[in-house]
Length: 161
Ligand code: ZN
Image 1 (cartoon, helix red, strand yellow):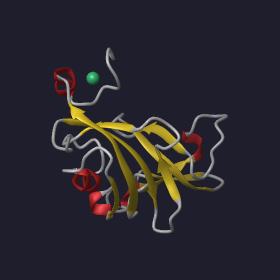
Image 2 (image 1 turned 60 degrees about the vertical axis):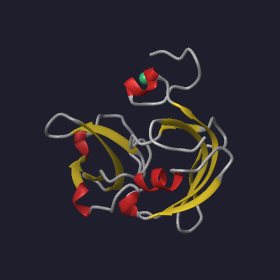
Image 3 (image 1 turned 90 degrees about the vertical axis):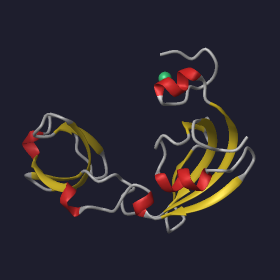
């Protein structure tokens, strides 16, 4: 079966950056399951997979605009160290969730720390990066009515939530 809108697709993938450093992979776990055509994976990868079928293997290099977007330097800010909970150890590179001025949760990465301030970066960790995907299509099937109603794929029969 070919990959098209409203089909449930299982893939194994390895994601590498320009330096061929592995950033992420499904190979040590279950395949990634997604509902095609519903923007559940980055747009460039979704386009590259359309029309492929079970057993196909593809290599796709995806520019930031079709991946996680360009890096936006406006999305970094300095936060007073005392705004972080006491006793929490802060380390560069760690992800941290806090509330913005509107009270919405924002996930940020700690970019720098000095005595009084912490520089946080709300860009997606993969923003600005060219993504090199090595993908094997494991399975393609029609979505169930329930999956279409929910707008996402369900792993296996009898899955409920
Ligand atoms: Zn569901």
